[in-house]
Image 1 (cartoon, protein in one colour):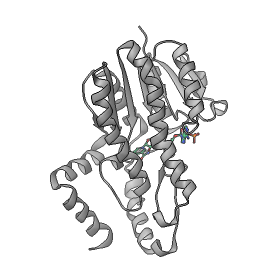
Image 2 (image 1 turned 135 degrees about the vertical axis):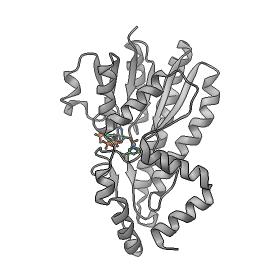
Image 3 (image 1 turned 120 degrees about the vertical axis):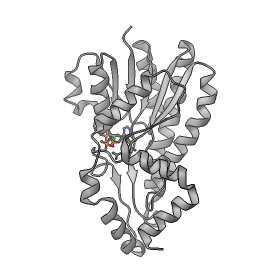
Image 4 (image 1 turned 90 degrees about the vertical axis):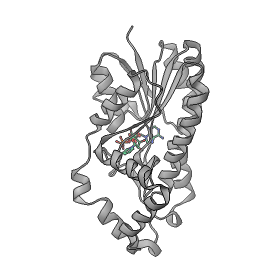
Length: 270
Ligand SMILES: NC(=O)c1ccc[n+]([C@@H]2O[C@H](COP(=O)([O-])OP(=O)(O)OC[C@H]3O[C@@H](n4cnc5c(N)ncnc54)[C@H](OP(=O)(O)O)[C@@H]3O)[C@@H](O)[C@H]2O)c1
């Protein structure tokens, strides 16, 4: 039987690439996005259904899950919608703090909760959340983004026990730097003059030509999502690409304290 994946944030980047990837593999795709009326590419594809969803609109989560499950069995839910903030916490507004937590964390938790009865009834299903290498290691000026992605990691680890008993898999995928709209459109950059010098140095290193030229294409992430969706394994994490794997392995080998001290030296010469 043809399988179905439900995707959030399918208007661009990893979400859109994954909608196309699963479509090419013969799946039904329910591609959700804030403004489906603006979409022109996915609308051309057979067996791709567009539905409106802003993951911070918790009423809309309820209605879209009801609508999606009324269309038939959903096999995989991909929590992809998300964005980053980079800059000093002191320069961040309350609205910026709440929006990123509502999107990257509460949106994921509420959408997942809403789908559980459907998966429980089917005695199967896979929840996959796009975390980040930033869910496993931490860098300066990304504190809010890390707060959301590290929270996703702990939440997933716990939920995987609880839902595993019911035949439901709960997994995360950790992309490294990926060529999407993330750095352009999906990055909120709060500023504060007290941090200008550090922040300028950080930006030169973090957004250097070398980093930008080495970005992985989003299709690389889609392949790993497909593996997570179909391998049937009781496995929590799928780290994508050499850069992210090297970083994660280095943290595991060095331990959290030494890893942190090393980055302190790299960034601030301590
Ligand atoms: N690119 C990277 O280097 C990288 C690395 C690690 C992890 N990630 C993660 O990958 C995921 C996808 O990001 P991307 O790189 O593909 O960036 P992207 O191209 O900017 O895509 C972000 C998507 O999230 C959607 N979105 C944002 N807020 C939303 C909301 N409230 N409700 C519904 N959709 C919303 C955007 O929709 P609109 O079109 O409506 O704005 C867009 O479709 C994110 O969770 C991100 O944290 C990215």
